[in-house]
Amino acid sequence: MAKQQTEVRELDEGSYVLIEDIPCKITSYSTAKPGKHGSAKARIDAKGVFDSQKRSLSQPVDAKVWVPIINRKQGQVIDVRSDEIQVMDLETYDNFVMKAGDEGLAADDEIEFLEFEGQRKIV
Image: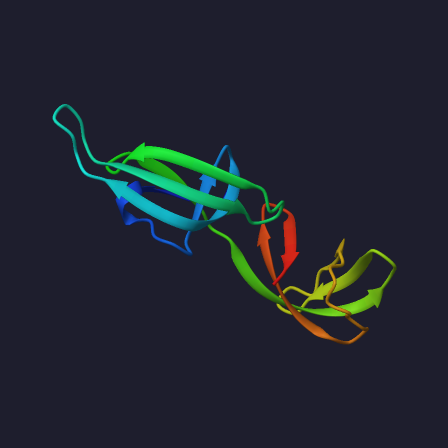
């Protein structure tokens, strides 16, 4: 699994975090001041990169969390079917099938996609 550990205070909006072992993009980040008997807390609202579900996380700012290493790659569309497309990775020349979105793609179009542990999504 391509991931690294970091402190919650180092995260910000637009970065990625693993919540329940699912890679998510942070949509909002807020902190609460430390109280009389505790440390400062951070509340993170995020959206799943591959499933688009909303998730939240509340941790002390000095807690450690996992950050996924998501690769951004270039590909070329080889074939378009009704609900999926066949893509060739322009770096490794591997062919794979992924779900087609509402992009209106045609054969020979170049696309940019995200990849994490075998999961792929068109950007």
